[in-house]
Length: 262
Image (cartoon, rainbow, N blue to C red):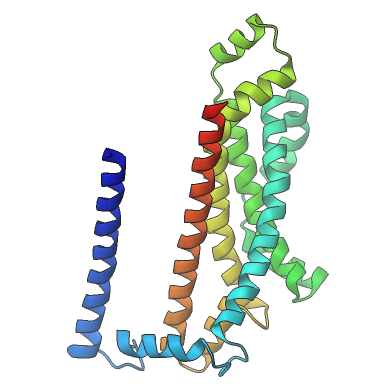
């Protein structure tokens, strides 16, 4: 009951904080008019733009839904590949010293390079299609997933592994039954971090090379001095990012409950 009560309080406070920001925005711009709408649009104008962009393709050739679907398609493609490859590799590096010695030098060389720095090279190789943007997302999610999976496995308590040895567990059994369940919170932290980083990197990549997507929409709005459309794009990015993170958090809770039940 206490947990449900805390969740209700949290939701109420969260909604109140968002409504407060919206109210301040409305009062400062729409009522007090402290700046011109051509510089910073008010809440009413932004909401009108949002509604119209749901059905209109002007001025960038697609509706808001079409831009959003394009961004989601690219983001989830690159993110999924990065997670599928990154998590097992991070686990293998942490569990096997030979794998660690072999992969770590290359990984340490690639890790400091931000995903966006790869954009020009990927454009040269793949063009401005979905492949180039997906590869930028892949790099971001791949690095984050490796780091957190590696750290999670490394944090496994030696005492737990020793207990496994006492009961005659094999290395594979210790990995599956002890190390990975222990590392699960860190692995999901990596997944959530990678998702947020992938979403941000995608928008930036779309600003550089794309013909559709939220980043492209924002860039085109900037070119024609449409700050209302820029804010619509920014708010859409924020809301969708929050929804994706919430879904992933719910999956994490379900996985944790499933492991505890075993």
